[in-house]
Image (cartoon, rainbow, N blue to C red; front, side, top):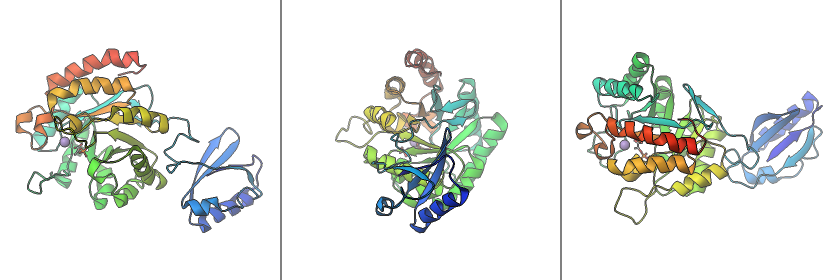
Length: 337
Ligand code: PEP
Ligand code: MN
């Protein structure tokens, strides 16, 4: 529900309205539109539906929102969410490429990776310090040590860094070390983690769950947003289907649907969908063509030695070629690479 406040409403009447919102266990976000203050009220639908809002002194009108994800929806918020990251703005005409290794493996490995990214003109490096692995015996990541290495990368190379967080307790810690936090596909409906991500002041990449519908995906974004953090970046990374020729089915139609449905930026991770490096280049180009705001892609200077996802890690030369091939596609769809 959106409550439009009268332009000359008295302060005390607005306070009474806000008290009523609070008393009903609801929360609100404040926007300004020309000379109007708008309160977007979110919470339990039954409480919101209760009459009486429109008759309050300071209220000009009440607009009901039909979506289950009012904050993420475009219904009453057509302006695109813009997320400045370094010299680029995600959600604008910029096409933002985030690339790097699956995992942080050692200081030398992340430093070398960062130097390579920098030479390629990439400004944000991905690398996970906490690893969600299907096998409990597989490499589990370097943990906090890994975060510290990412901080070193930032300091020494000037690169921005992005990493996954799996545990609620690690969210505020990771927020001190890195520029962008990520919720992995397996945690898309870890609601406590989403709420914690809502309390930080850093952009969050939210990956689509392996079997999540677009609606569930947007409701997960809503969890982060309703807790205060509006800097949510949606990431399509493939969903599980009956197909076995590749790891997951990259749902590029979801990108087109999301761009219609939400004002949040949408990026694509072709690496975890394809599972094999030779399939990734066309998926990168197709992502740009379909309207994505950027890519999250895995690369490694020595994939044979990678501690995780080596088979899908691009060689630096492959990444360089993709960046070159992306240029005309981006230009054709009005994007700057
Ligand atoms: C990753 O990006 O490193 C990762 C584990 O991806 P996903 O959560 O999409 O499986
Ligand atoms: Mn990976």
